[in-house]
Length: 84
Picture (cartoon, rainbow, N blue to C red):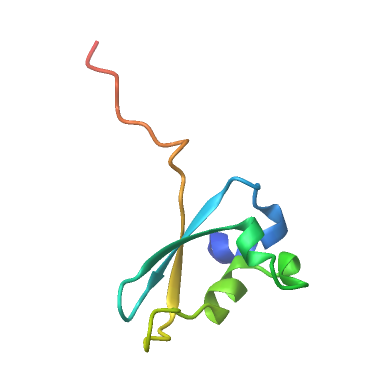
């Protein structure tokens, strides 16, 4: 058992899916996608938790560990109903 990061590989992501990477040290926010991750050969077969463990902040002098979150803006919508 695990969370969504241990269940999905990079190859499972759609081409338009964005992932949010947040530095735990300096709070820098970066959005990445499948194409960004797959720039190095063999990464498309890695699980997302492995990508998260390897990710480091590229801010000047930081090199902190990054936390991954999935962005689902297309599927999110506000409550539009009411009481009947």
